[in-house]
Length: 140
Image 1 (tube, helix red, strand yellow):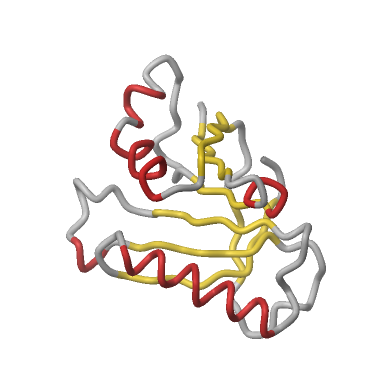
Image 2 (cartoon, one colour):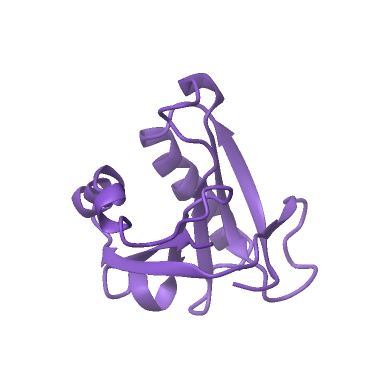
């Protein structure tokens, strides 16, 4: 990844259903502002390790990859860390996403991970239309 910026919203609280609702609300906001297009890519970013961070302090960002300057209104902008990422493509179902997170250590045991960067959930329209999503795991 190189020079990726997102316009985003952040939620603080226990990971789970609230993050799902944040994504729904964010997509509605994008639709209302004519920003949800066939080339749109959304990211979900869990910024904290739930085994290390109290539930009331867990941060989750949902953002749209910026492709056109100046169209994102009052949304804050942040950069995604440059670097190499391993990409895991999985079915975009609650069960498969949950299974990925539960078994991430097994799936990544052969990789040299960069634990200073968060794992990114990537939702590109081209993948979602085939009921797929991607997990981007940072590498050293």
